[in-house]
Amino acid sequence: MRSLVVSLMFCLSLNSLIVSARQQDQSHPPAASTDVLPPIYYDSLLNGLQILIVERPGDERVTIGFMIKSGAAFDLVKKEGTADLTARLIIHRARTINDKPLAEQFEQLKVRWGYSVTWDATRFWFDVPRQNLIHLFPLLAEIFSRPAFSEEALQALKRERSAELQRQRPSSAELARRIFYREVFAGHPYARPVEGTATSVENITLADIRRHFRRFYLANNAVLIVIGNVSSEAAMPIIRPTFGALLKGKLVPATFRAPERPKGIHITLVDRPKEPEAHLYMGHLAMPRSNEDFIPFLLLTHALGGTPQSQLARLTGVFAPAHVELSSQLEAYRLYGVFSIRARMPSQQVPVVVSTLLKFIENTRTNPITEYELIAAKNYFLEHFPERLRTPRDIIEQLEDIELYHLGRDYIHSYSRRIEGVTPEQIKRVAARYLSSTDLHIVVVGRAADMEAGLRRIGTLDIVKPTSPGEQLAPQQ
Image (cartoon, rainbow, N blue to C red; front, side):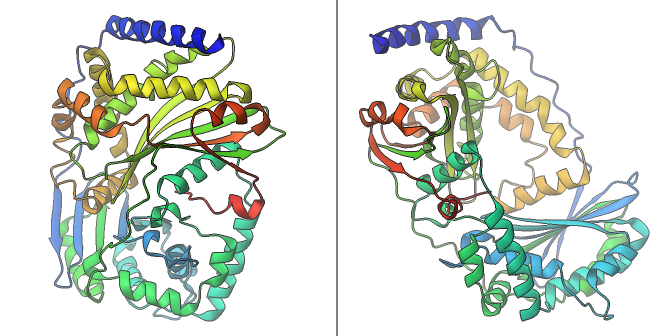
């Protein structure tokens, strides 16, 4: 009887979603900015290093981005965390060309810095007063061309990193996300944790670090970006003799096995008996970032569950008086993407929420979103795009993404046109092509006793009893 009531309410809710969407006046998109970014100077060195310079005369400091277009996806099996440790060793170098600790020289030059490692790339950033730029370039060129890896430094960083990983206690929501990614990308490097595990970090040797550096820290596998009060005429004479020392080499192709796609509905239930609230992720593989369908599918995903006024947000009324939170997200990387619906609810509600969401996905494949909802999604991205170019570091991240994912050097200036050009027909096509209600992964973290029987009627169910080491095995980006 409860299932029948929910089904009737679901049908009524879909009708109300359409009516509500049509009542929103989103017919006037925001004016597109034509000057979101100053002109970009492009150049390259003989060793293949790509250089981008954005002159901003009003800036007091200069920000530098240095990206290696390879990341943790190339970590060896059982040695996850190699790319991360390599970056740490580079930036924590004890001595430099004038025999001073790198940290001391950064302090003298008033350098702020940071780095990040993802599956696809390793990124460093440095921020320095303009007058000290001439001294910073030689330092950076040295640490990226002549590494000084030592066994002592490696062992110290391994102890530090292992301790950090062992202290991690992911929340139920974070645990669901990690295991969901592990399941969706099963059999592919994206299923493995970027930072590694305590065990995998312990397996990494100095030879592994040197091998990773030698294979991937190549001039023709890197991008150097300079933003601030410096012209290309002033910067290039410093860059050429310093970064020209980086070696050129043979690029390593990403010849990984494809992820194992599910046949049917596969449910992983992580039992946390003391938690009355459950966290859920459900979804499947999607397109890579460079795919032409990315922007239409991004708009669709946002309209489905990206705002408090989205279809999924309004669908939560079906489950009243129970409190249920729903949202959707699209994340895309160099090789694959992932579409997910996320939910938070009382554990007893999980089976009915899952059943309702499966019907919602199936309906969306044939009746995705209204024209008004598409306009609202377009307006959201057009309005918020300038925020992604607010600071020098924001600009560097966008330019690095453009180079990494081959989005085209006109991407920023053509962004408005790309968004505005998406048609309802494209939305219908990507919904039918990429959404699935029959072949997908579902991960639930919560009290198994409240939901096991109901979930077994929906798909193939695996129940997991979490332990601290096991919780560290799933990816974290």
